[in-house]
Length: 176
Image 1 (cartoon, rainbow, N blue to C red):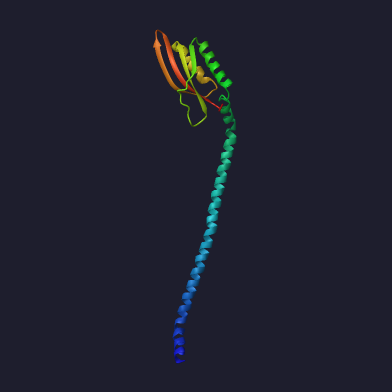
Image 2: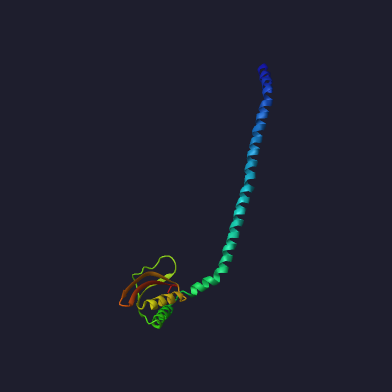
């Protein structure tokens, strides 16, 4: 019994330190969990702000699309969408060359590689023979036609006052 009293008496001196250590540990655990809980609203606020920014960007994209819809439609209308429309382009080129007294040969050129990206296109080879001034006018008038074309190759040879020019173009189209 004496030993138990002695043990209790010795522990009474350690008791305040033990209680202080338990209290500190308890407060540490509470502060840790409160700190974790306080981070959640900050993360949610950041996510909400990012979502609001994304919504503003999406609204801007939709507005730009609506603003550009008329331009998109205009470009779409300038792309032939049928073989008849391609034939109309060819007829217009022939009429331009004829009105400038230029001989013209047109053929579909399968050697012109189509681009993988972007709209469909058709390679055409134009051989124009005549005067320099007439050639200049023909090419200028073709450029003014309401079609999207790209010159791939232009090769000119002159013989005795006549110029023979080979022009390879790419005619952009809607899918046919």
